[in-house]
Image 1: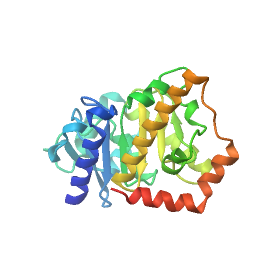
Image 2 (image 1 turned 135 degrees about the vertical axis):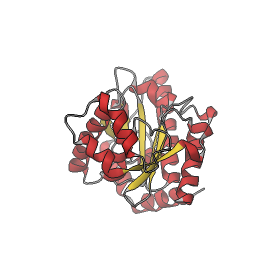
Image 3 (image 1 turned 45 degrees about the vertical axis):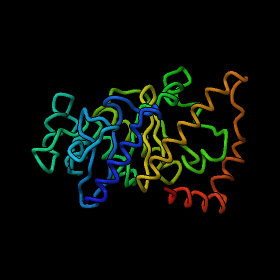
Length: 252
């Protein structure tokens, strides 16, 4: 657990670096499974850039998931659930996005999750285009790092209802594509990266940032020229790209 905690602190600080403009103040949250029915998640109000061990809360997965299936539970009962989900009752209250992280770590198959409010990505998600510009690709590395397809969730206030809608989107995505996405785009909110490691989560968020900045910049030159669908499909399935994906995931 200690190594996972240290890596989660490092990941959080990397996402929270001011010059990256992925998250400021108390924005964004991170999590990692402990593979024992519990997971670590950022505490409510904590800052990613200054993350310490005391800013992470260990949460019971079954308690968080049960809340999603309780149709009688609304906003008024969320705090009580978050309090009762803590393994250590003296630890800080976990983020209101704990339910979203529970979904990604359980049904999404992720081991690590990072959510931020990247300025570049929000510059697109907060327009009438929403997530549509990300549904086609403009360069190969985005496919290699972020996956061929991305899941999308329309805007819902952060918390329990957002997590419920994210679960519906995740299940629909898996029914269609046969696997979980690496990215969930929350319109008017920000991206969620689902990874097998802390490194993969950071790689995904950094590539999404580059992708978004290129999309915005292409608008001054007549708009993006998207890759043909057949090309994007081929890049996703090429053996050499699978190898490169593995090498990127292992890189420091």
